[in-house]
Amino acid sequence: MGMKVSCMQDNLAHGLNIVSRAVNPRSTLPVLANVLLATDNGRLRLAATNLEMGITAWIGASVEEDGEITVPARTLIDLVNTLSPERVDMEVSVRTQSLHLACGATTANIKGIDAREFPVMPEPGEDDEVLPVPADVMRDTINMVAFASARDDSRPILTGVSIIYQDGLLTMAAADGFRLSVREIPLEAEYYGSFSLVVPARTLSELARIISDEDEVVYLILPDEHSQVLFHMSNVDVVTQVIDGTFPDYHRIIPQDLTTRTIVDTADFLRACKRADIFAREANHTVRLKIEPQEGMAGVMRVYAQSAETGENEGVLTASIEGEGMEIAFNVRYLIEVLSVIRQDRVVIGTSSPDKPGVLRPVGDDTFTHVIMPMHIGR
Image 1 (cartoon, rainbow, N blue to C red):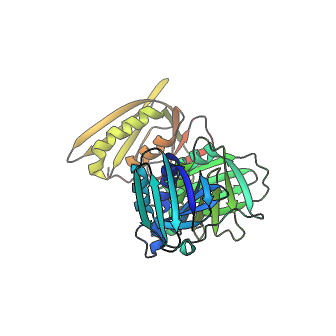
Image 2 (spheres, rainbow, N blue to C red):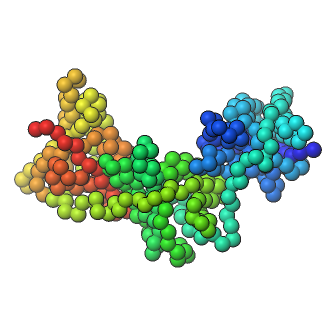
């Protein structure tokens, strides 16, 4: 006999939903389209991997006999999602490598592949370096940074997020050549090492999605050779390959000499950008910010978009402006993306000239810096 285990349908569905994001249905290796089920110290361990990222989740279960099997992820997930919310009994027939499942009045047999063919998932080791990061800090930082990474693989290093830890400061950064997002967080950790690595942004975005409100800490674990990174939580592990190469030195593209600083309401600016995008989409998403200081009173910033086909639109925002007036154009999609992750009520836009990058920072949070390249517009 093989594995014999029972668990609740909702726990099983939840665990499968977590690991399913690492399944690669189009892989040339059939086992990578499968999910691993294995008993593990009185719990049921679920795992999936696409070789770049692996996710393991543990769920409460009642284990009668230890064992393991892999079965097609899509089949199992679709089946479990339609089962009634009660106990699911599972049994493995080792002879036929199939999983027998029973729940309420439903029974099913799913053909599987021997678990020995499934890639070994790394686990935390005794000598690994471990940096504990508060879970909400990890999730917020990923959400504020990862979106700025490159989508296409022409420069693989830019599809990653740079993670650096040194002297109590954790820095994450992503850049795609048009914008840069950086967050620096001081951590109070009993970890005295330092490291610098680049991790696929896709994996980090999945990690941010998985971190639950019950998780207090995410342990960033570096196995010896640093070719992989493990993110360890109470019931879930996410493992990722590291991207080879050197991340560009982004500090030199953060402008230091900003001559104009414009402070506006974040939500108002975001709404103005969303409206401008209705007109800007026909014009390469170009939006012009017209910054107009006024003597002795609050200035205004005009958010202006026009296209030959659609027409034009202008939103006027009250702004507190230090420095010269100016006009600068940006890709409005980039503005929308960064304004969507800023939690503070007000944002400061730093500019120096129409052909130099602009900087956005939340007012009252000096951990976050976002740099956007301007768009060139014919006068």
